[in-house]
Length: 596
Image (cartoon, rainbow, N blue to C red; front, top):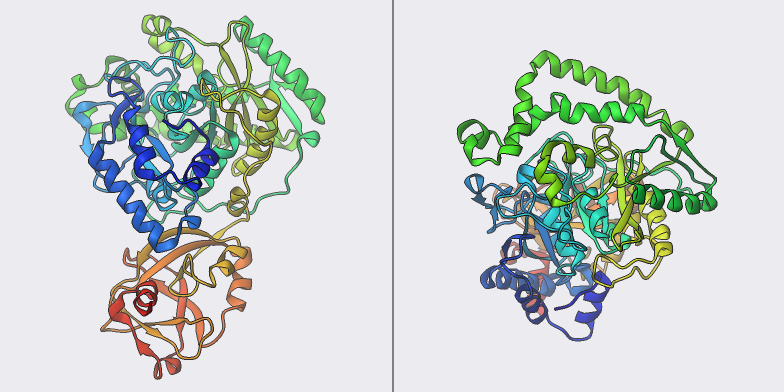
């Protein structure tokens, strides 16, 4: 089994290892009796993915696959084609027919799904104990909770079974288990990562996040995952990023009147004392407005939104749900439609007050959790202890903010202590740069893996996602991956989204006298589906790219097989008269291969 970061996996393949060998070893190292897993890829599922990876490599080249052969785990409320999605409820389970949007993006980058992980049922909980598939214990002390609801994902990363795993985070479900297991939990802005293919907890608030060994790895994966999804009404494009402030210039706010366990208070005070020496200003402030926001999440009508995702079971087979989860959803019955609107008005007023924080402060620094309870404590008082875990996490998504949880220190008894940095929405690129420096200073290994971050900088891949609004461009010829003009896309900050086809209404021609050789795409009534690649490009660079397109080619609107339209290469009709019709090949790459 290989325990490593993304860079370690890349190096292993560069030195001659093969996905077939490494991934089978990794699969064999996973124990079906381990409560962190709900399902592990069987041999056929793994081999099918490896075969698809080989075809992708042959098509585009390994250099274009940043996650080539890297295994990852998926929280079992996210669809993976051919795997069961349970949401930790057997009566709810179904075999997914399609990959979730984020899964397809990661597969397009070369990643391999190793298995589906345990969670608090229907992602309702912050403790990791609310699952009929078993309690997931803490990595450092099996008597303590792992944190949830992304308990299994955190556990398999902290033990090195995978270099990263997907979490979901509505009220802290990705951040709390990261803190308890000494790994990194990156929670994006609501809407930054598509929720298509996710069993919703609260659809308006849910965020698919990343649990990883290092800050750099979490950022690399997130940069590949995020992007506008036309199928998700809540998906949003990344706006233009403000100028980055270095750590030394930061104004940091910390919570006043903290109610932490004694060891957590000592650890947080020690951490903030060191942070104060590195930043421009650090001060305790009142979190009362933020706590009022948090109160709305579990004591307000947002609980009714949780019923929507689990409605079929909750209304028709309530006995199949865990009693504690059912009792949480029962709270929804207290609220009327009028109550829901009143709460919306209240949230908007609170948000107006909360956003004033950013006029004076750049980032909030909080303990990820107030203490680390035992499994027995949670079983004895499941509601109160669970609620306590979200004191510094519950308000973030309701306010549309971004956050990253990271290890800060070890307590005297050897348990991890973690902190979370919170910033306004869309500030993930800043968060990971600040967190990478703090991670380096802490010098802690990820979970029990022994792996430490190698550098104090965030990966350059994130800068692609930080340029601002994005525009999709369909390329059909010399700009495909591995082709001679692909560098023009990359120099404009574009990133690959997917390989797909046009609608069946196009013909493709090999143009005469173009250097390098190029095709021409033309819409017609007697056409076929033509292979294309869709790329995302910062709109700020789109004009520069279009200005470099030589005649007879141009940029117009292309209809994809899905029915979606995007910008793409088209050709003037006069150039087609002397061109060779190559539609029968189905695409430029297949035509070029035939010439060889």
